Length: 376
Image 1 (cartoon, rainbow, N blue to C red):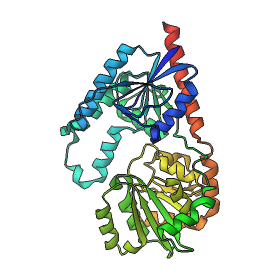
Image 2: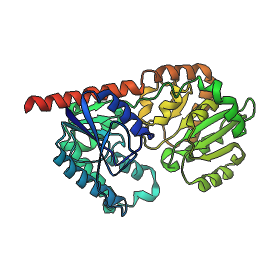
Image 3: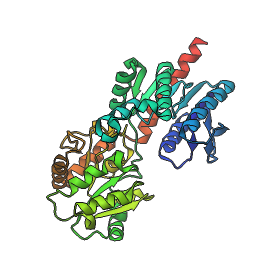
Image 4: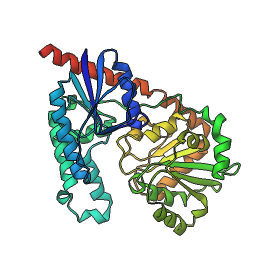
């Protein structure tokens, strides 16, 4: 049987990327022996794991040694096809789920004053990641981008041929994330959050508050025309800093910080609108989950998921990253649109099931494997 290898530094069957991988593996397990090269994993039926040694002494050494050792091990194991979900330099197919690091650095230089005077070239981790990108984009046979935005960035920064990159948007579990969850959880979760009857709930989901644009959202929230509203913030970040910011804007009593939140379906069920003014997201899964749950979305053009949103139909995509007045205006309009916009968001999300995404990826694996066999 042909041997298919996936490269993932840490593997848990419950992670977001891993859930996507598992769906993909299920599509292919009748055709391939499924293997995973990983440093740490949760044993999973039907998968053979191979340990990749890593020097855990900071991100630089961890990233460098994982790439070196994964490539050495992969060479020994003689795969029929290899797929990497990490920035490694020896695979047949690379899924650029983390986007383009060169673009991320360019955005930071343009938008963060502190970094305008700092050269990222002196940071060893950034230098390593850029070096890995240069090599992998040059040598990998097929690159899977999760948005057209990421494809364009890879071409622009690295000169990769357009035909070498295939766009497969992220997929969502349409049974787990559904408007039907409102009947199950809306009342209970809203009561738990202290939301009053008639109060409109805006939901922000994301870890790394600065990159996800929470500062812009707080400023916009303070300018909303809708008087009966509350902002619910879920995710890991500098909570104290943003609590202080909310207090300075006079909205601290209307903002709830939850921290990391596992039962995320309940939050989508309790909310009326999803907002994510992210500085950079190759394709935000939370955006697609919210749409599948029947929520209108307001997000930035720097979110790859924005390309599946038609302005004024499933939500809004403001022209700027940090103009709080523009964001407040779009949020007010989305709240006014209400249920009809949420219904259109769900309908659009139905085009992006996790099964569809895995099926397209599986076809890409088959094409690469067939080409390799035809040459041998």
